Figure 1 (spheres, rainbow, N blue to C red):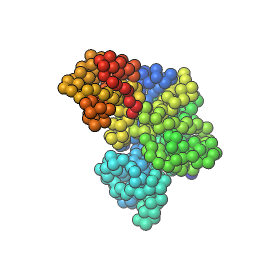
Figure 2 (tube, rainbow, N blue to C red):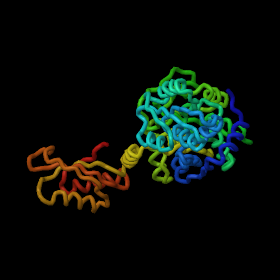
Figure 3 (cartoon, rainbow, N blue to C red):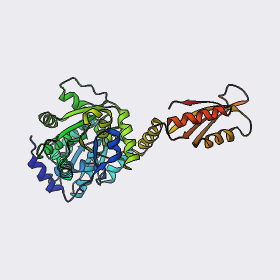
Figure 4 (cartoon, rainbow, N blue to C red):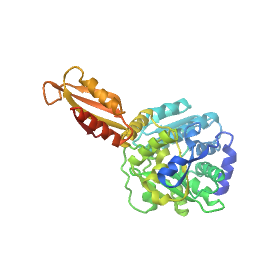
Length: 399
């Protein structure tokens, strides 16, 4: 199996009527934060919420009308296959990991696919998908290790380099390697050198391990970046990334969470864990990108709303803007009002109060746990000092 630059140009012609050309925007604020010139490719704006529709569409165009297809996916490839399969008149079945967020399962079904949950991760889902493909004579649509899929993903690279020919580096999340492979092939055809860097979570660094020729270090389990939770990289994709000297950076779960929160607050855009991985790499490895024009692929926005809410709250806590304060005061009328007034006078805001009359040190005292909004951590300490100055015992709690 091979993929060429010509294959990518052909894919672009084949799929152009079904996918949008997403914007590539310069982010002044993120550039200041990371110390590099950041340009964001908003693939989360595609109809199915990710870049995966590119490769899925290109591959499905080669399936005979009337034949059923099957795929395994953690969500984005599933939605791409479901949507474009339905558009092309194909019956689609998707096998998804058992821990797939409900929102992704529901969306895949809404797009016309039959969904079965099996396996702890995508590779375990693949076993069931191939079994069903054989039993039902369905055409298997691989999410990354397929020439037509890779060529479709590579169209994203062509767009980026047309939108900004001066990019020095393109950064994208890596699961099985389909996107990074397509980007590397597109970059190789550019009229000036462009480096491609892949990013993996510390819990699923399978491609990084493969390219470094070291034993697998993946710790199969939950990750904020479920879209790239792949324990076995593709054979074709591994070869392409090796041939094009694509470097893989491994980032922490905390860095990915921080990147999700920053993109939400600064760019007003919602991304999933995989979609934030490229920005996480710029924050965790600033020296790698310093002084360059860097294109970051926001590869997907299909995040579970509950997960997003948790990340947003933790982001505020990590910035010192949301704080927990424990106070103990006499259990007499007006105590809570006094604490609230002190906090208000310090220009902070109470967002939640939990009262525990049994956990205090005395029978006539009570415990309050407050969540308060502040400008930053220093402001939180000012509020704490004001409460103590009012004669009330108080301390700042960890999250």
